Length: 442
Image (cartoon, rainbow, N blue to C red; front, side, top):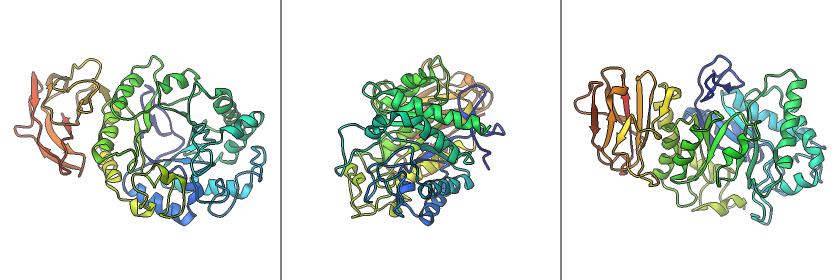
């Protein structure tokens, strides 16, 4: 079992537990679990996710919009996070006791909770007649935000599985960073110092354009870097994140969600595998209506994003997207993923056949410094050429099908670790698409 709280690895490239064991982040977007689920439903959801290899969830501690309740910020039992006027210095213990219980359920299962302490949201984009986030209230009560951060961190001081998620979809050019982040962070840091607690990590969540990670790392309080992008920007942003002078672990905090934006299975797999083969330490998957735990016909504004509003969260537990995450976990958790050094900048390992940078068919790969493991994600019909001298000895080569979690041994394997070798594309995978993972082990 993971020993919390997590911390940054000695080389600042990934996360480890208190015993120094590397922890890959296989996350699920569960933004509204606290507000829209009973504790029995929480247990059902978490048990399912653990069984599929997920070890992290994103949860909003307070919600402003995406519930079917009246008012929208109530939880399913009708408890409000604050008094009836939403004063940040007037917390309601019944509500926060339930928050504690939900996070405790995740902790008992070895799951990280990225705890969104106050989501500011997109200004001027109401859903269901309600602003998505808390920025209006945060701005009006800016003098109370340090106390709010301090209260929440103290109230949840025993929940060691928390990574604090600061912000949420705000445009760094429009919002006041002092309101959105600095005051809350200062309260969290003060509370943990007061309680002589091992500091829990902090990560930000900023709107995806143009380079939010550069903005937040400039603040210096963020321990973890992140990618928030869609399409080809994912591997390009991952490349940028890896190459930062201020080295920090990075993960994909958000990309296209299943059942939104015409997202198909191949898009979901590309998002995930581009991160893992570019030096990332985690990826967060999302599904609509899972992220807000919608029930068909309940009126939750989250359905306004959906391709189809005929889904209910409990029937979407085993969608293809969730299974693709399970297959990724199966491959990576059994291997030294944390030692992969991405090759995208030099192409000294994946030397040719990788396609054109800026296209969705672009292949990405990396190899460990000791030459024991090489991974290449091939998103389309490409014949990739690998410099085998980067491997440490005779190399077993297999294709891994990311759509069903099965291996196909490549004819002639194992291969000598000398010269360049072309690996011909194996044809369509089990889903009828062209993406595969080339796995080289020596």
